[in-house]
Length: 99
Length: 446
Ligand SMILES: Cc1cc2nc3c(=O)[nH]c(=O)nc-3n(C[C@H](O)[C@H](O)[C@H](O)COP(=O)(O)OP(=O)(O)OC[C@H]3O[C@@H](n4cnc5c(N)ncnc54)[C@H](O)[C@@H]3O)c2cc1C
Image (cartoon, rainbow over all chains, first blue to last red; front, side, top):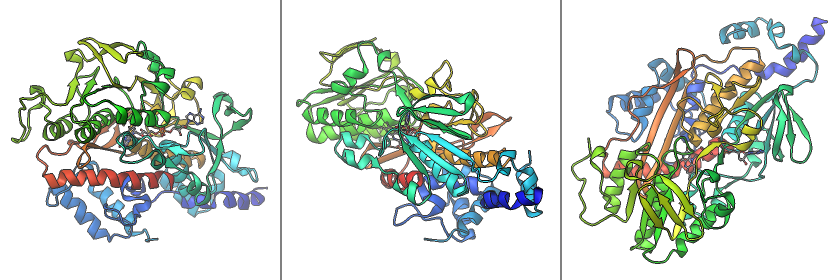
């Protein structure tokens, strides 16, 4: 009985296993309301985050935080995330491929 | 229930089948998530749920085959864009993400039986229901006002549609030197900076097209989100005099103008609270006096969209109480409420909030379907961009989290632009506001 059920279950939920969000995905999704779904944008005045090298993302966030880099609202938003989360968000965006 | 890490381990070791909800053990039973309302909250939720898991069946029930976005709709009133520019189609959600759509109106249902009734007479059942119906405008709360009057003579234009075009036409036809009166709503309401942005853009329009016109805001409140930045913009652009309570921290270029501004803000403490209106003469009686308007725009008190009331999702304050971890309804199992209709903790009634809530809740619904606990440390964001003039941008930006289980707090201490921003930064804020209209619509609907 059990044996017969397993393939069905996996068939249904095969993608659900993949659906466990990667660390930082929820935080990264909050960027998408301006910077595009998965950080993907075309020719807009916000920087595209998809495929941004990890170090570049982290540097940008830390410069917004310290005020080294002037911003409109990023200096406020960056206050909402821990260094660990920013690193995880950097991983998330670095893993995205440009369309 | 398993947490995330246990789930991953179980998945890796093939013990997953045992942990899955019993329902999924039956062949061909695909979980069905129904979304009531294809606006910002509903559309974003449907898209992100499908992105998370293509195997979940998602059906959006929406009364209009084309969405009309409220955000940015004041630009129609000033002729910057047309009504057509507010329209957003559902084709991408259908074709690219596989979201199903039923264009019908939900008229009621029995949420204890997980079933909804539609205007066409059909019934729709669900495993999980997500409700994002927006707001209901309570026209009748303003004595002398009604929906009928709003549709023909005194538009609110707070839910986009015919009233938006009516207000645009009325502004254009206003006699030279006429008076535009806006009645601002009490808290809480959709888009906190929105009424003040509208007053500003109408004033800017009048400077060009009707230079002797007057714009008067009658307000039942004494303050609003982004007030200092907005008032500073008004001072610079429209000779508005900033009252002493708002002067702390203002830059040295703030001027005291000897001539009255064409824009006037009459607050509650100055008698701004409206008592009644006479619709025929467009005369507003407020605590401080009465004014006869040439164009009258009333933004009435609000509560959760009517269907949320009818389904029993709202409380005595008119909004839907939810568990803040996942925005699950406090009133019914397997039901979630998003967007303007919720109390929503501290998240304001903005499109940005509805979009952010939708993404967090999409993850939580996947977790619930898979028998996992939702993420216990959710994070939401809100940014409301607003304009004091076409080239004068400002904003409020928030990141929210939970503490002690169910108490929401804002993480960032500082949420407004500095009052000492450079002209270039202010202008960039306005560019970003316009960019946001496009990129945000894509994140929700494409
Ligand atoms: C002038 C103005 C400017 C704004 N500017 C901004 C801004 O700059 N930034 C920002 O973030 N937000 C802004 N907003 C606010 C933003 O538009 C709303 O907060 C957002 O749309 C809320 O999303 P929602 O999903 O709760 O409701 P909505 O987007 O209103 O969606 C509700 C949907 O449910 C459908 N529906 C309702 N009842 C039923 C039923 N019984 N059956 C079937 N379908 C139903 C409706 O047709 C609608 O499509 C602005 C609003 C206004 C009015």
